[in-house]
Length: 353
Image (tube, rainbow, N blue to C red; front, side):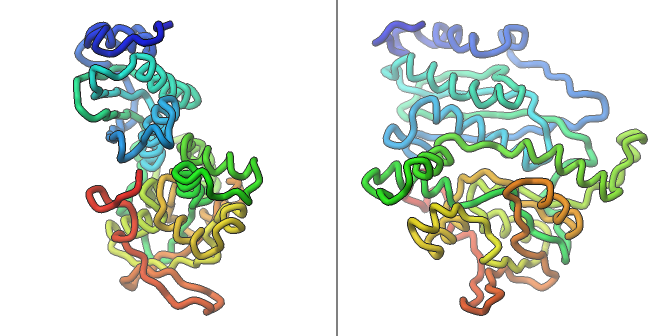
């Protein structure tokens, strides 16, 4: 255990790297690169993400362990959105020399706590001096070539499915930034909303259920080699930048439109009771960092998945006509176009992401 008061500059780059190697499998670190061997007939999926102090996390809202958890979860969520199972991550860390070593170790412990739930590990990385603390993660995953999920595969008539509630993370951030707010919330509901922001869960658990549903629909023949599997008709991504962002990104990549039913978007009941349905809906669409999956797939397959996956909901339909619109079946609200401009965009937003 590191003694209190020891700073990064006291141990130096090599000293810090030696300490951080204790968080990694010994057989995978120590060289210039980690060697990972996917199974035969599998595709290697690589994704990377940056988290910056004051932009993605801060001392006001995030303990080091939580910052580490969220950093790992964000990358695992990207793998899940591609249909890939995680193999490992590398971590690049930029810090001031005056940062306490204990802060860094707590950050890495948070990453490990998240990764262990999904059978993966930190397999390497680097540390450098910087005036702003920055975490850069590259995640590696594998998937069957026919199981890769892409944004560009949505087709008219597809159902738009979300794997869980939205708006909880934005609500948790609000409670952390303004602790005096939400006093009417039950303690358990308040804690759940904060937990949704500080320790989101990447939806890797959805993938086995998705492949089971696909098999049940007759889209897969497990007795044949992978090369004989039919291509999966499925589009998707995660909702880390908001539900509206995900739907717009998928539709843009696929050259299609969408109609999204406002009443079908799953919202936390406690959030609706606290801020009202309109603000809760706005946070669900544009708040971001709920890390659910947004999938576009044939209606029958979507209905099977909803019946199998607790919390999932069909929120709309893909259309051949252009335009991505929020609609109201009861006609109580006018149709509203969904847009990227209202979601989080780097260099344009003032609140923490």
